[in-house]
Length: 169
Ligand SMILES: [Ca+2]
Ligand SMILES: [Ca+2]
Image 1 (cartoon, helix red, strand yellow):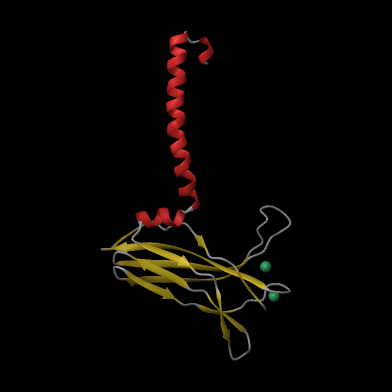
Image 2 (cartoon, protein in one colour; image 1 turned 90 degrees about the vertical axis):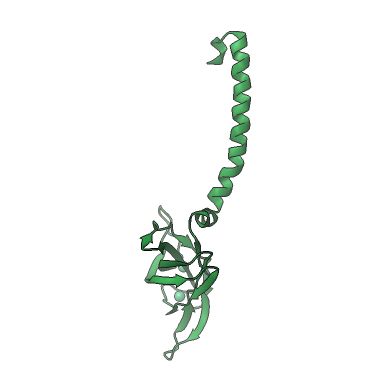
């Protein structure tokens, strides 16, 4: 396009493009940081952070089945009620798109959990290990939440995944 412009306009056009590129350069630094850390972006809108912790071994029940604790860590810098949804999963690949053969193990909802300002709560959820395949089970969890204050509830956040734990079972 700029090839057809008079020389002075072409010059101006090039200068404004340089200014634009500089602006975009700054934006390009900021955008990946935001995309890489959705939890931090959420914590600027929400008073609480909800972290699905990596599942841990929690002994055996009386039948000898291994137990897993899917803990959820909640911190609030202002007093809030929370509704929290948890899904428990076993991680699997598949040979065909979308290459996601994860097995759903179950879900738990917590409603109206109150956390005071500056308070932290760890929700414990001990479950029997579900044996979905030969060899170890790669269990993980995902959580999302909404906050309530004076009867007004926020939108649900996106789902956030924990790390996997490989459990012999
Ligand atoms: Ca697996
Ligand atoms: Ca197994």
